[in-house]
Length: 292
Ligand code: TMP
Ligand code: MG
View 1: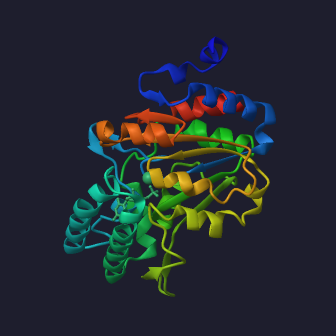
View 2: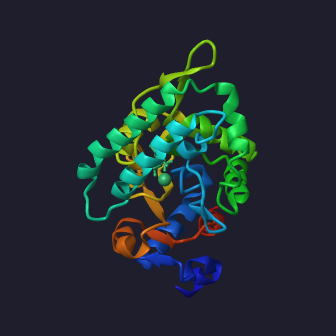
């Protein structure tokens, strides 16, 4: 469609893959027609709003930001890295089903949370660890967050990471606007501000459906908004919209950061728009600009 291509040249970049460009265009037009009052954005955090890599180096996830000597000792850091080496390849393995991955993800998160609890992490130290973790949000994040706030479009950040760290990153990036809602794994501190556990049901990469139904669906800000722009980097992230009561239009964007050749087919099959090794918010920002 030439008219839309003119308005959305970003979708013609070689890093953008679409199974059905027609469907994307029709959904975008329907969302534009319905207006920002009907829109909500649901986004994953780690490796979606945050970068996968920066200057050739892997950027930290919220869990990895905790790998700071103020918070955990060398031994704990070493154990966490060992677990990452074992379980991350399983998380992204295209030859395994989510059903096969789920027990192993529960194992990974449970082991890591146990290790963290043993470290008697102090709440007061989190901000500094985040500060020293460096640039982590994708290029163009300011436009993304600011535009949604300006339009009063709710942004639900739905993360299997660590909520306290996530919030601190968003706050320090100066984009924790009133329209931002977070569902994540939150730390539970004792009266002295020392970590003693994690609150609520565990969220890992492949149980976001349960989280969506239990935690996102009741949020009044989201309930009456039937048009959803969803951003994620894992196939498990697609379940983040399962709590939306009566969805009219759903447009899904998947960041394909790693194992590109092995996973391209499954991503193109599952997401409406796939962004290959794109460390920026350029496409989501263009979509928002078009819709609103
Ligand atoms: P997300 O839902 O915000 O993407 O957060 C989950 C990511 O966190 C997932 O892709 C794996 C990653 N992770 C780590 O990097 N280190 C860890 O120790 C754990 C448990 C998860
Ligand atoms: Mg992620």
